[in-house]
Amino acid sequence: MAVVSLERTRTPTNDLDQPDIFARHESDIRLYCRRFASVFVSASSATIVDEGGREYIDFLSGAGALNYGHNPEPIKRAVIDYLSKDGILHALDMHTVAKRDFISAFYETVLRPRGLDYKLAFSGPTGTNAVELAMKFARQVTKRESIVAFTNAYHGVSLGSLALTGNRSKRAAAGICLPGVARLPYDGYLGAGFDTAALFERLLDDEGSGIDMPAAVIIETVQAEGGLNTCSAQWLRRICETAKRRGIVTIVDDIQVGCGRTGTFFSFEGTGVEPDIICLSKSLSGIGQPFSLVLIKPELDCLPPGVHNGTFRGNNLAFVGARAALDYWSDPLFQRRLEGLCCVLRERFDAIAREFPTLQTRVVGRGAVLGLTWSDATLARRVSAAAFRRGLIIETCGARDQVLKALPPLTIREDELDSGFKRLHGAIADATGNPRKANRQGGQHD
Ligand SMILES: *Cc1c(COP(=O)(O)O)cnc(C)c1O
Image (cartoon, protein in one colour):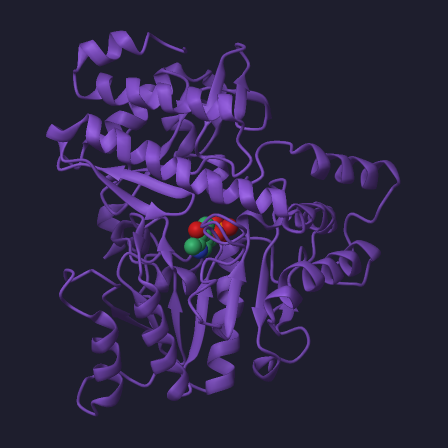
């Protein structure tokens, strides 16, 4: 089944821009480097520089792994200091001071102030590995197999997580069947008038529905890869309450939209929902170091030692970065600025939607993960390409790449934000053949 869709595609033309060494030696599976075909050397805050000295504004932020920007000064200092003292860099999951400091800071800064009670399970360093571990917990606790995942979900690409992921071509790459998942429509999938949480409840309670009683339901509050679909607090509550009453484990995958991306540390804060399991990764280390964490309710902490082993569980440099990153969260000014950023982003995107009314622009997403989508589904890709030519790195998401997704660092400077939006305006004008706008916004790099 999968083999057909994996027919080798020839290297895209923009690879011609790339120095030979990548095209010659690196596997064709590489992706982002084709779309943003420069060779980068350094970066700070939201500004990234290529080897030719060109500066780009980064609205991609490592797909949400750099919420605090590139090389954030306080985190960088902590990491350099740790390295310079010959701090432990690798210890499997043995105890280290760096690990203890992180656990204690995470408890004091994140869990305790929110009244949350979770154990910390360190999985392998990738997000997908955290999801794999979350699934194991849920399946072993309930002794059930199936997990409910939603349309357009993205949970990673190792086989277990891939089974949960919606995207057809990514699924096809597995080349085998991906069992153990029941797919349900996400909030809004069937239009505003259709409550898919009610469908969830009905399918669970109907002996004839054909849905086996699941071990877990896994939810993204914002489908950051799947097209910036958001769920309402009411929908989230109903799904979680329905699950809880039936002994189904609730998992929130906060890998991309956690760590502040929606304006609060966890994306579900304020909804009243307290998931059984929470997956964190991407921005957790604060500085782009690989690091993942599964938070689990103590009563579900059922796996015996060692069943989910991994050489890199507990990346000590990431512990150090993550601990330093938590200092942002004990600073009320950071949180106020973050709220401000969320408002400013919303205003800026709404303004773009108003500026290009004929394109039927829609603003999607929530908090500091917002995007634009147009009646012409191909426009997002073209705007992304035009933006890169103007010195703005911004990616697309959605099953058809139909959404332009902005993930600026949460700590972006005002001048960087202004410059990024100027380039974005220009890029939309370029991509839609609006020369007046293009001229007004200036040429390449303002
Ligand atoms: C990125 C992501 C993953 C997978 O993380 P990797 O580190 O790429 O394996 C899982 N879930 C969500 C929501 C993500 O955004």
